Image (tube, rainbow, N blue to C red; front, side, top):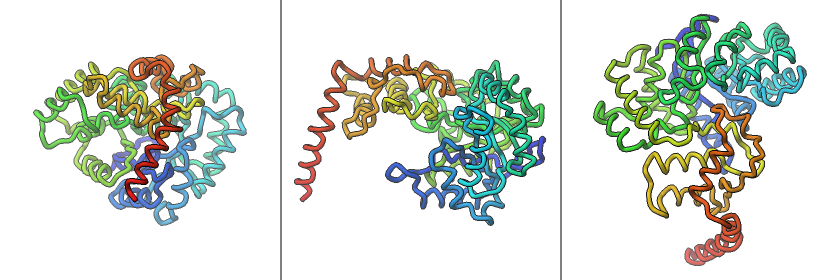
Length: 407
């Protein structure tokens, strides 16, 4: 694996980083056995950067359990200060100390201010963010400081100039090339020597899985042996300013494919014809994708129990794959996964427009409006009452008969 240099600090980082937000689950919790094997295999194959955050559920604690001193010496640990929860200076110190305890380490290699835009950074600066950073560094609790950016591209360079950062983390993929930081913003940060870490290279899996037929045909005509994930990951790693691409891998197949891509892709290695192929696919995708959501989950949890990412994902898939007919596949998926048929109610109709999700969204989507579209597409008058009946009467009866038949 060819490591990439961060000019600001001299660190050499693997082009593939392990994103610990989407670790494999079992019964709703981290599958500790499988996740440990995945992470250790990644490290054994040269991955030396692991990214987590305070808000990623039990991720920090899990990493603290498995990263023994021997393993710890092989990797850089990155985690994030939950900026949304910071109300005063003491909050920053308290969060950092708690994270050190969770991770079972004395010093964090890369500490990022989470989900930053210009308004957020200005608010934190008024609460003595710089004092906090300088003290944390002098106390030996953090080595490098940066931020993960979730604002408009027009503000990115301003935030970069607010402090002498070491690294930045941005959303960047061929579909969202000019969302958030944009290519120009990435070049600006790189010109200052900052490390550039990329999140959502596959746009929450949208660019890796099944695509509209027209898009699939373009890729297969150009190279029938290359997967959709390969095209997307190579496009990001082709950028000479990108230090590391973070991937939330939860299967060995994903890990092995991403390791192969990272090993074979060097900066500026894609041909002009390959770049043109990606551009054509992007145009097709833009014509099909209705809501520009990466399913990152920052909008969650919803106070009303709406599964916002899944609702939008299913809505997008209806148009991406041109599902037609009254009881099409998307309609079935909606009621199976969020409609409550299986007891997991999170349908869009439960939204009461409280607005708590709006300020959390990195894409700045009008989630309330988008959920209204989802509701109109899939739901009918009285659906919540009908679903309640199915959950409390119909589904238990169904399970009873299945039990009887299996006796």
